[in-house]
Length: 346
Image (cartoon, rainbow, N blue to C red; front, side, top):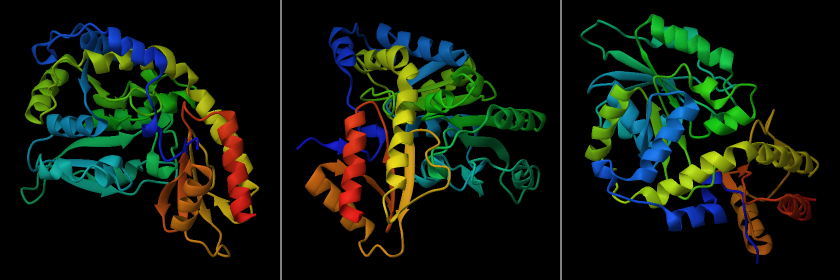
């Protein structure tokens, strides 16, 4: 049975071009800075995003952790959304490993943090309180439906942070999806941020890795933190080679995933018993839930789709789902998924 895996874009396999590049990659010891392929990837990423330097990392979670630790000392505070990946899905690493306090404020439905909420959250000179050092945003905002933060909004937050002497970090795991759904380039969306990380292993289909970008001084500090966290890799060019292919060949096709997501959403919207979240899909993610009259649980439906049709969907709650489009989902898979839901719920 052919598997149609819609759980996440993290399930993507490397493309044939990536596998070939990995097999032929020039490698060296990256801890010594001698892996030419890693160096090429880092320079390419920094150039694309308009930053001074980049650092290849095993994961986006490590990139976010390193960024927070580089900007904040123990007992300092970062302001972020209560739906932020850093807060919800990174095992409390900034607190457990860095002693950094998080101040969560509400994400709005459009993924933003209200400037007045950020202003109210800032703490300065009271010895009873942590000192605010950093604001962190996420683009696209996963828990808000994969929605894109606009250029106008992030520019406002950038100006706001500069005026108050605060650093600004972006969890840009799907930054290139944001650019594909926006009139702004990835470089423009990255411009207000002092640091940002993006994933190679989601919609860009590389097997492993993220890149952290920022100023040369910031990346020098981040390099030391990577070593402390056990992220120093040796002949990592084998992995970086796939990342180069991802940036050169996969970025411009992300709009195809967004188009298929809209096609899939349109089909699912016609299935009795499925309620799509308002506005979904904004990019490559569809969020939906079961109507009250459906007697099955989300878990039962997920199991039935998987066992009978080979379709895997992500459970986001007892009766809700996330479906994510990516390079390995084609038009036929979209039609099969719509048909399976119709047979199950129709």
